[in-house]
Length: 189
Image (tube, rainbow, N blue to C red; front, side):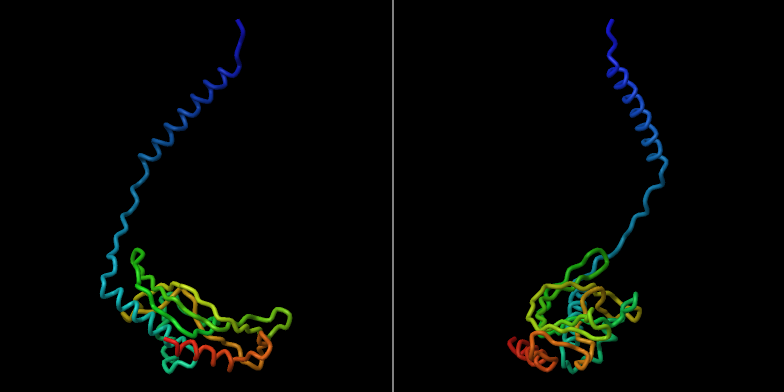
């Protein structure tokens, strides 16, 4: 009789897999059930209030805004909010908010006119570029400890480095020309 070693190997593998499956099933039965997570989805009034908070944030973020001093209050997020440089905002259009679990996600179409980065070749200096860009962006809008709606986890706006430390591109561009462009685009509503 001729022996076929592959049949013996197949039987050993099948027996080993069967044992492993039994152990896995036993441990699943013994595991504690996961805790049920429950939350109340935001109602339509909350969605409207969150959208208004996002609108106030974007309005205060526009270069030259008369409500710019409200930004720290509008971004007082539970996890903290460090001011970060971002592009120069010219115009925005708030889109309908949506909910994801217990968080409201605010969305807006924004038009920016300039962005600023660290100059890697000259430490302590910056490079700013004038360019018009349109994007649809998202932010989390949450209730703060005081019950107010605050804008978190999204792009912030405003160039932070002084013009004296900034090289502008293209040649002839400056903070003043970027601001004039932002005002011009903002007036086209």
